[in-house]
Length: 365
Image (cartoon, rainbow, N blue to C red; front, side, top):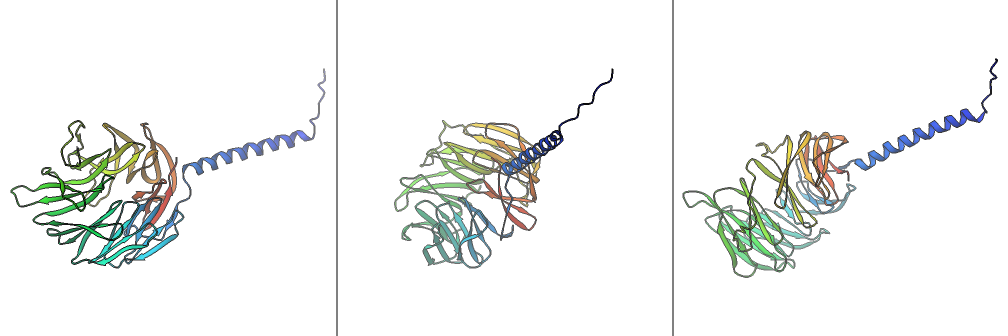
C-alpha cells in the first residue's frame, strides 16, 4: 500500500516560526520584568565614601568638606549651603543643624537658614528635634547645652560640669522633651547618668544607669528604650525603669539600624563590628516588640539595613531580601560591587559604596 504524501499548506512553516518568535519575546519580557522588579539601575552620586552622607527623607545630605548638599533620588542637587571646613551636621528628617568651629546653623528642608549665629565657644555637636535644636558649646567635659526653638530663639541653657557629655536628643511630642547622657568620672568607677528636661522648665528626671556604655536612646510608644553594650532597658520620661517590659539581653550584638513599621519598632542587630568599623557576617538579629529571632544570610554580608517591608543584606554584587515575618532570603544581582553600606532612604533606596564611588540603589519590593 503506497502512502500518499500530503503537502503542508505554505502558511504552516510561517505560523511555526511566528509562534517561536512569540515564545522568545515572552521569555525576554519575563526576564526584563524580573530585572526591573529586583532593582533599577543604580544612580551614581557626586560624592566619595569618605565624605559625610546621611539619609534625608527620600533624599540624601552630602557634605563635601565645605558645602552641604541635598541630593535627589535622581542624583541631582536640589540645594547647596556653605557651612565651612571641619563641619558636622545632624537631621531628624524635618530640619537640619550644622556647625563649624563656633558657628551654628539651623536649616529647613529647603536649605534655607532659619538660624545663623556665632556661639560663645566651640560647638562640639548639635542635634535636631521637631521643635528644637540642642547645641553643646564648650569643651567635652565642661560647657553649655543651648536649646533653640524653630524661630531661632533661645529657650534654655543647661550647664554641663564635671561630666563628659556623650549625647543629647529629643523625644515625645506635646510637649517635646530633651534627654542628655553624661559619663561621670569623679567616682571610683565611671558611670553613665541620664537626665530629661522640658525646655524652658525644670529637669523632669535623673538617674544613674550603671557602668555599661550607652550608645543609643530611642523613643517609641511613650517610652525611652536605652541601648548599652549588654542590654536594652525601657524607661518613662522621668527615667523610672518600666519593669512590665522585659529587658532584652544583646551581649555580643550591636544595634545597627531601627525603623518604625506601622506601630511596631523593628531593631536590627549585627555581631559586634570590627575595630575599623567593617562587618562580615552571615547572621542578623531582628527585634520586634519583645520577639527576637536570628536570620541566616546565604553569604557573608558587609552591611544590612531595614526597609519598609523587609531587611536587606549586601554581599558583593548581591542584595539579599527577607520580608518581615519570613525566615528565608531571596537573592538579587546588582551591577556594582558593594563594599560599604551607608544608609537607606524612606522610599527604600540604599546608599552604598563601590570602591571610591557612591550609589543610590532602588531595593526590590
